[in-house]
Amino acid sequence: MSNPTILVIASFLAALAVGLGAFGAHALEESLSPKRLDTWNTAVTYHMWHALALIGLALISRVFEVDLTWSLNLILVGIFIFSGSLYLLCLTDTSWLGAITPIGGICFILGWILAGWKFITQI
Image 1 (cartoon, helix red, strand yellow):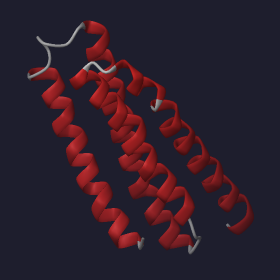
Image 2 (cartoon, rainbow, N blue to C red):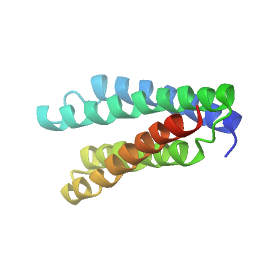
Image 3 (tube, rainbow, N blue to C red):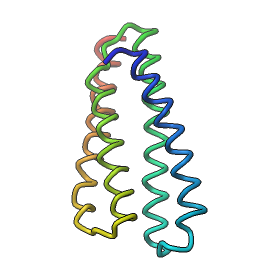
């Protein structure tokens, strides 16, 4: 995926994180248990931070001409798996979805490690 495409996707993901945060705070406040609401907020937090990270990494990639494709893709997948599984867990109360969440976390970790490696070796 090209950097402009990542920037567009990341911008919409950030907007979605704001919307889902507001949805959780207002529409789900009465229907979710405090524990599930906390889980929802964790999903929103990781979602937003990593959407912003995608924007930052895409810009760094362009400015310093370093290929961060793998990092960008892993972080993008991490948002969908980590935050997505937590959103679904909260909305459906399907507890086995919690077993999928760490896969997204591993994607985040690998994405950051690969970015760090690229920075060490190419910048």
